[in-house]
Length: 333
Image 1: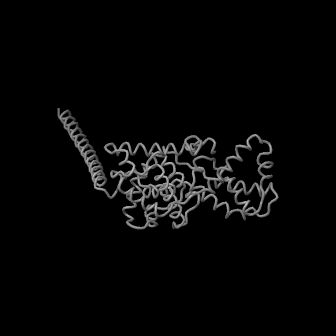
Image 2 (image 1 turned 45 degrees about the vertical axis):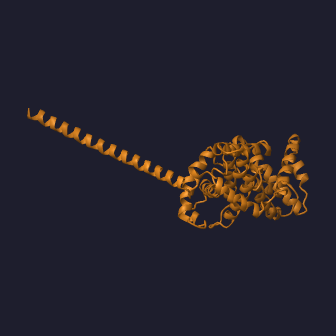
Image 3 (image 1 turned 90 degrees about the vertical axis):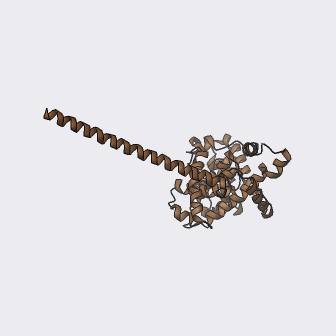
């Protein structure tokens, strides 16, 4: 399924460098639009750099993970994986200065619940959010269509969880290893960490799954090299070097994760509040006026539609009455 999927065709990239270039492009585009009257020095001090955006987004990925972990009712892990994919994809096409990550984060999780058929109502969903829940509901629902548009409506996500189950069954049936299920804690921990890297955007789910299995096996002092070379690729050894490099790279990504420092994050949060696009800030007057105008336009459209239907009904009635009158006149004559 994955080789023919939209995920493979449109959302799997060649390298981390390609992702860095996309993020840099969005950063520069935002600054070019909103900093036209500033000097380069002013832009540097006022706006977030691409590296600062990446650091801030890393912090929000951690928040996404924690939000899903404490969610009630308990959230299936494939829903969490899908939410991470949506969040990462969105910020390849947008700057965090345009759309605040805390608002997009909640929308990504809510949309993933719907797509993955984890049935929770919007009321149940916002019950898991601290603060003004009515406001949270409005933000999520107003951002939902935007999110789908920015994902180009490619909403089906192939996570590594199904390939993992396949590997564990295969190891149990074709490889002499006692109780492969004991690898699960190590696998789950590894997969959780891959969502904090760019691995979901650069490698196939099966490659990530195999990296997780091999990592967990090494933690349990088990060697699966023979299983990979003989059982998996015994008849396709030409593909083995590509797989080995992918697994090595995924494990390296997980091993080198750097968590953002809290003091730096706090400083970036303050900077973001100043430089963010106020047209997309629900607390700004510009945003409130734009929403008010949009609702007024919708009301006008509904009123116009209602008036049209009423007039059409009146006209139809008049025509009917005229026809009846003509028929009566004809009969009298």
